[in-house]
Image 1: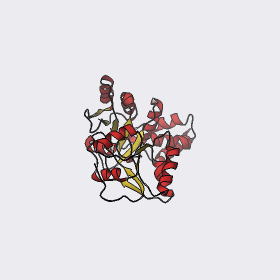
Image 2 (image 1 turned 90 degrees about the vertical axis):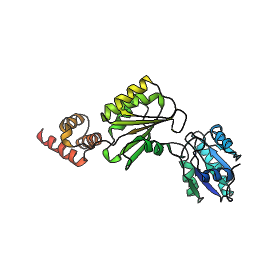
Image 3 (image 1 turned 180 degrees about the vertical axis):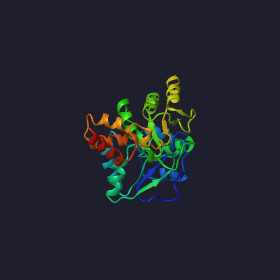
Image 4 (image 1 turned 135 degrees about the vertical axis):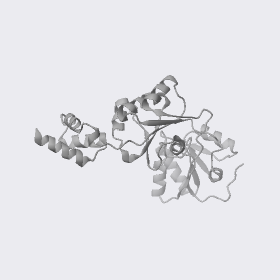
Length: 282
């Protein structure tokens, strides 16, 4: 049985757990999970498998989107009694597109210690094997489920964000790749699927290529989508006048300039100055 090296002080421990392979866990994480009074987890069945693998018998209690408010109140009561609690997600680092921020926020506000026990994280693991620029990146979680809303969100991406990292459902993966291609053009995409698990797959290509690949080979499991850094756009690369004229049919000059700046990544001042020039010429 895993045993803590010393008695844990009271507080909340935010513990990263494996993405899939049960041995991808830190020694400190094992100490904490064995030493706390209670483990708060999304699914006790999933966390239970990990605990059994490592011979840990700490009690568990569910903490998920549907009981977050009540579970937070119970956790704060236990912390007030001097207990040590661990918060885990089903896989990876808690709070990354998972529930938990309300608890960490409430615990800190109430004066309880909140400790990070770092470890696996799917976005970082995917970035490490994608072969895309990693000096700057932006994690966006999940895009909207509907295509129109997705394309609108994608149109607002700008070069300064660097490599874009997304989570996506396997059943929407092909259509998401289509939307990326329609909005951003022939950019390179990498999809990392089932990281650290038996059927791990990392595939790279253009949006068109990956849309066709996943349409022909429907994927399963957890997917991380990475989009290469968007090329900086200059006014010479686009028909700025046409975009502004189209937007100004339904929007004010200022709002039209803002919309075009978001779509193209151009400076809002450059776009607005051109809108003013168009306005004076009509």
